[in-house]
Image (cartoon, rainbow, N blue to C red; front, side, top):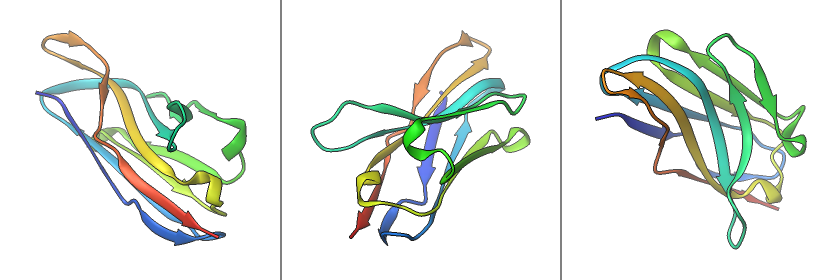
Length: 119
């Protein structure tokens, strides 16, 4: 059974930094894309950043220049370094990945980690 476990959320003041981690486990052969999404209260879930196994990245315009996504393929782990945080970054952050296992390739979500940015 594949599991994605996020960590690193918390409360931070505006202008501060946080680093999120997401580790995937459970019979994984490989993972193509890994990404971070977020959902603020009363809003739809939105893409924050995504990274392929080859290291290509894509960011939402709202976080470009402030957030950096990276991954460790050997550990099946993806990171999100968040700098210059703003109150509007407050949301539950979810990890997403599409690992290949003995049962094929399927998308999975983590349970989320809360990031709260105070003004």
